[in-house]
Image 1 (spheres, rainbow, N blue to C red):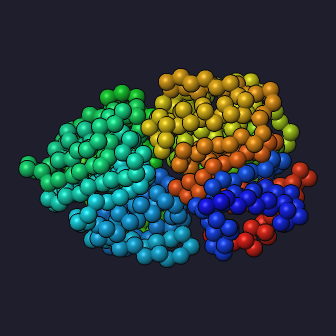
Image 2 (tube, one colour; image 1 turned 120 degrees about the vertical axis):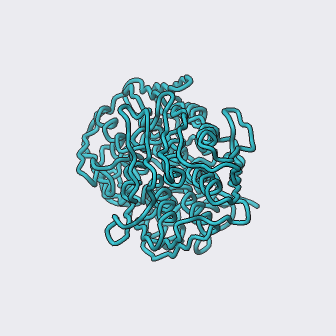
Image 3 (tube, rainbow, N blue to C red; image 1 turned 30 degrees about the vertical axis):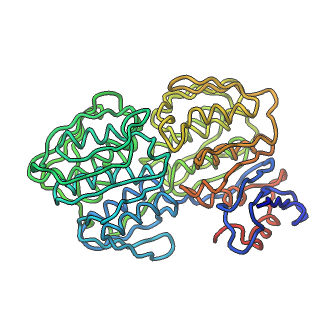
Length: 498
């Protein structure tokens, strides 16, 4: 089927920000999933206010804990994305009722236990669904004598989960990976009843590949620590510690406490605890804004000298990626922060390269690839080995796509070093590898004053379906005026879902 290329400039009689290239003509209700590519024209400045969608990490964790509570729990500001859809579908298949209340809120009604679905649970490429559900269904299978199989996309079958499975097996669960990948065992995951009773115990796991393995074990631990305590020991370095603390804080809000040893080396869950919603105000949990999503808009403002505020996460956030604002500050941006908001204060400023340890912020660290294009000097991004086992092999993807702009990029096992080009190459065609963060990161190259072509822009639906709409909304002309003509045109075409 022939592609149709539309120039919004021709249609609107105004400077275009986005030029969609489609497999089919635009019709009412057309979404980015139908778009082959999107050309983001040079962005002179961004400014305004962005209200962040709910945190992906918190959304799926909160849904799961609500499902493990008896009764009704309301989850507000829930992220609408592919990842949360996969979690909701899985919970529905296991007997949990979820009612859409509108305005990003749902009511979860549960008996406090999960039923065997009678079919494989397909979780796409949603790591925030696969990891915690693998641990929880393994615990349910051990305690209730039921069976579960979790599967996903071909890429999910390449993402290692063996550290988590090994920890569950040490505790007595009958669970296994059925695919041996390059970096260890991968989904599908099969959980079966156990011959012996499972109750408490000690497991020792690695923390250097993903903190989500520890978080998953923690989330499942109350189901296994029935009359005896359960202890989790970390055998090496634990990455993304703030996200482990986020998990522990969330568990506490759902009435389960975790004892933490100094240095995050040992975690103990006392016996007899169960998840309840009694400590939640009106049995309602509010999901704070996504700090990873905030990084794109903060970076765009810093790159263009704009004034912009992200609303929904700030200094009180336990999300590790909120620290990205401090990295921008180290690069020369003017940053102001309060408990719930972060602001980039605009003005002429030459950003400078940094040498930064991103062990705790691997997702937001990707955004630095575009910021590095306009920074003076070399930017060194350290301790991001976890990039290699994400939605795609992100280290190689970042190196390949950043190099297209003329940057000199050096890849090391856990480090990425970027030397900006003297002149940034325009109209680079960005392969997104079905990875939402690659698409969102390199759209920001337009803030360096060049057009950029994003292939498969619809992959942003994994965590931020309205990303390009939001970026368009806060894009200003060189004189600081909003491009209202563009927004009216987009509304007329019904290009994005409302």
